[in-house]
Amino acid sequence: MFYSEMMFWARWRPEDTISGLLMTWFIYSVLAFFVLLFFERFCVDDIYSIFLLGAVFGWLVEGVVVQTAYEAFPFQLVWTPLAWHALISVLIGLYFVGNALSEWKFKKAAAFFALLGAFWGVWAIYWKFEDGYAITTAEFAVYAFSTGIALMASYIVFSLVRPRTFEPTKAETWIFSGVLAFFALSTVVAIPFSPLVLLPLLGVSFYALKKLSGRESILFRFFRVNPRRYVMLLFMPLSAVIVYAFFREVWLEVNVLVALTTSSVGIFIFLKAIYKALRI
Image (cartoon, rainbow, N blue to C red; front, top):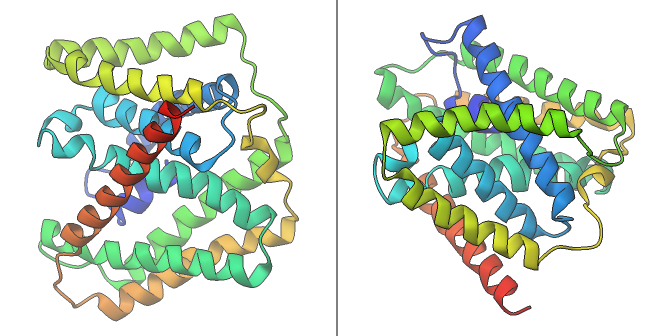
């Protein structure tokens, strides 16, 4: 939820409410169930498999829960499913952040979080084009640190739980599948051609995931973390606030540059993953 929503929107919006945030958290919890489930079922253990799983996650977010994937067709099949959800939320948020917290040296990890925060700060300056004004640096600081602390808490809880595997019961799987099916049915009613778009993409992704299956999922190995290292996560909002303060008055449509860059990277990794799967 942090990477897909809080980092993306980069400020509190007028329509944000406590109940709305809780509902968003619930929806992402449902999707997280399937991310965890597929991590285990396909023994995801490398960058390409993780990205493919992120692609599935992105298309479920943008093509099932909401219908933005069909608005600027076909560009929005890439932006934001591959370009943001797969690349930033899953590949970076799970894989690289997990490595940074558990395995990288302190200087390398600190630089990584500062760089990720700098990206967040640059991205945040775009929203003045949508809103017609730029929120103050203080407002952005409150937003960045409050959501950043919540992110840090989520990593800490996940580490304290120390799960070794994810093995839901049949009842749990049916319940979560039912919630996802409700959103899918709503999407089909609203956009009848959506299965013709989404099912082939999901099918190709699952086929490649099966071909790339490893011996053991790597998801849970990243969270054996020294508690003192969690403070590094706060380098991200700190860097974001500094960069935002510097560029706040700059009217630069960074959305175009970000979208083109991350979309290109997303397409490249996705195609490379499919190519790698076909060669097996």
